[in-house]
Length: 360
Image 1 (cartoon, rainbow, N blue to C red):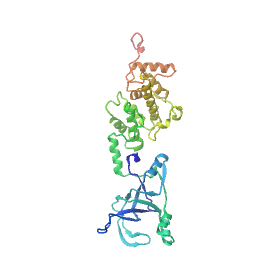
Image 2: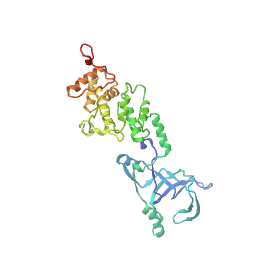
Image 3: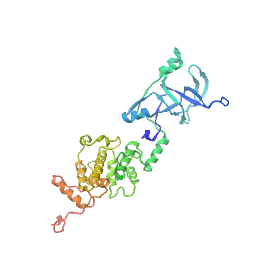
Image 4: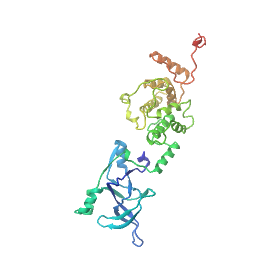
């Protein structure tokens, strides 16, 4: 997401043991006849360096990377100081620092920068047996970078939150049924906002996010089921006892499960994507396919109760009728299982005389 949206990502400099050496351009004094002056030197206050796309790609795929050079700038935490001299051989000012009373971040631009081992550099300065460029090269360090080492500017975080609040597409939806099944699409986006961006964090905020969907996306109280499966570990016992567990790797060779798994979705939401994609193909190839086929598919994958009725509506666009629900009850009982209503407000069964069986 950061790479796609070109959001700057930074790592923090260990200023106790690292030095930043940068190549940059500065405006020359008037009358020199040149537009900019290439310069190089240490920047002791640089605290954050921007990563380029290569280590970010490594982190996205493997969770970790390494970085030895940087471009595109960074941020410093300026410290007030007085210059009391210059160290010509070391190429930096001799400064007397004061206490920081008002910490701020300051943007720093450069063409190229790299990190040096501070201890090795100080040792090299005392020896000076090599040329300056060779000494710099010998003191370069590469740092390991993981997800927990990444920093973002607060303005970019706020922009992401505003984007979430406005309900825009946060992560590209990979399936063709986006317009046919908007309820499933919005579950996907809400899951990303909740479990990856973390711009929403409560059940109410998930509910409010889903409410931003187009009118009639979640009819017949289907938002309750959508909200449940957005969470990383939905309660599979609530409303009817344990429904059993699934293993996505056991769905068969005909299903390429990697196309349905994401770091921010539960296995149950991934399974909903599998069924949604399957039904989209069924509708194309068998336009007269019955809703009961879809109901039994959810049952086969251990969904149950009202969540089946809700998900059938979100995928097919058709509400399960009481008559179809009654047929599904008969199917469940024929397999030795207890019938559980998959639609709400179902009328009580009556005897052949029209009376409720309890009145006999």
